[in-house]
Amino acid sequence: MSLSVDGATVRYPRSSVERAAVDHVTFTLAAGQIGVLIGPSGCGKTSLLRAVAGLEPLAAGRLVMGERVLSEPAAGVHIAAEDRRIGMVFQDYALFPHLSVADNVAFGVHHLSRSERYARVRQMLDLVGLGHTAQRLPHQLSGGQQQRIALARALAPQPELLLLDEPFSSLDVDLRERLAQDVRQILKDHGATALVVTHDQLEAFALGDVIGVMNRGRLEQWDDAYSLYHRPASRFVAQFIGHGVFAPAQIVACAHGPCVHTPVGELDDPQGCPVPSAYPQGHCDVLLRADDIVHDDSSPVKARIERKAFRGSEFLYTLRLESGEQVMAHVPSHHDHHVGEWIGIRAQVDHVVTFDRAPA
Image 1 (cartoon, rainbow, N blue to C red):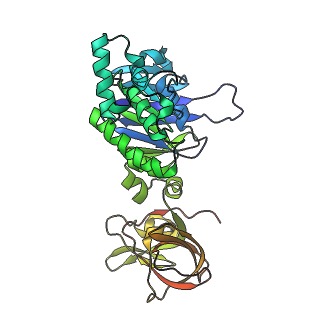
Image 2 (cartoon, helix red, strand yellow):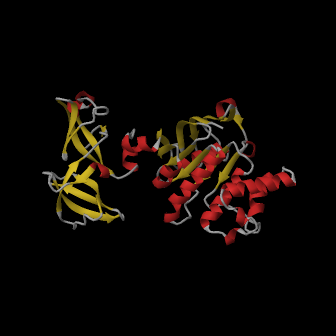
Image 3 (cartoon, rainbow, N blue to C red):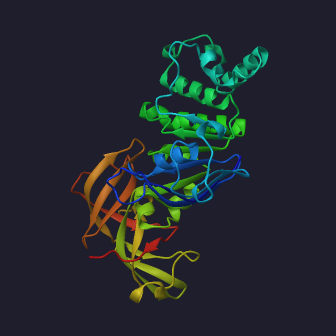
């Protein structure tokens, strides 16, 4: 079932913060898609999820699922949470500790006959790959298994939309991305439409068909992961997604079209580079991702290593150019240079992303 959010606004009456918790957010989630809301703490993503669930009233805007209006304050419409046919998976799984796995999954389908209920439980447990755990108690399962049981229980009543609130936050870091990929496959196998809240970019990338980046109650961009990374719509999205810095630059007319003069050399992107007149005198800031900077000892551009972080197959170097600007670079981990050492670098940018020059 599709979800349409149009100008959704949520305010907390007793809040000391003047701005809305959710401020005129608009997006569409197609049937069968998995959407993810991501952003820093306090950005409004959980408030928006609760509004979709019916747990928070809208102050303004409209929520529509399929052809059914769930909430529209201006028209006096607010369908109660229990009548929305929406399933939820919480951070703490909320499994009943005294009930078996099978009874947990069956909890929301007591309206079915005994044989139908048994078949639905078996179907859901097989879907999440845990049919063999039916008679166990929740505490006898690992955290990842409990999360999948919570997912099976939420899917059993066949909700029209599934909401997941920070579903992997209590799990080990190494398990999160792997389980996120498993959950995505389960949702796709079931044909479910889902909206997920997380603060973890890797989880968002592993789960989402489309991802929304929120900031101070507003939706900065609703797009696929590739576009968020390579074509960020705002400085906030550019800073929040991935590793990178902004460097002062100037767009000029070159023989082959517009190009960008930067502290790390000349950049050009025939399909995406703005024309010089896009900014006053062509002066702008250019986004330089860590994967845009290549270690090359033969390059005339030199940078001093200020910090290094080991990432297994690579280092993340923080570098200072002779001109004073800072850049970052992913470097293969067998290139193990010391902090304070000068190395050669060059730019290898496929997507030129520019913004207005930041105030000094």
